[in-house]
Length: 145
Image (tube, rainbow, N blue to C red; front, side, top):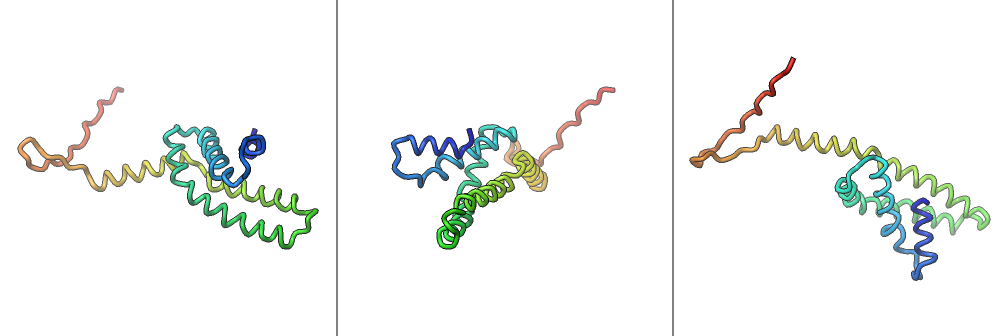
């Protein structure tokens, strides 16, 4: 069952009288959960990714769907409106998939940036007598041949 169908079942058969909250409160959490699952993210990585992308995604949704639906109701003949929405629904799914990208690659890239930053700005500690202690290089691991 896709996010669209789940949302429809929750709203149409539930005690709700409006569908306004479906996309931000049902569809997008399912989108992030399923893409995180498919891409092998941990729960923490999925939640962090959802928090980072949720508001920009809502903005993109409004920027995309408001013009599409204004044109639909103003210019598209009634008998073609279902086709119109289906085509643009497909386009929106492509946009979402593109925005989803490869989440693991993005996380690895972010981790590499953190490591690079730590290497450029080494962590300084204070020695036992209060003097600054310079970072030490990790001991080389013994090689077994």
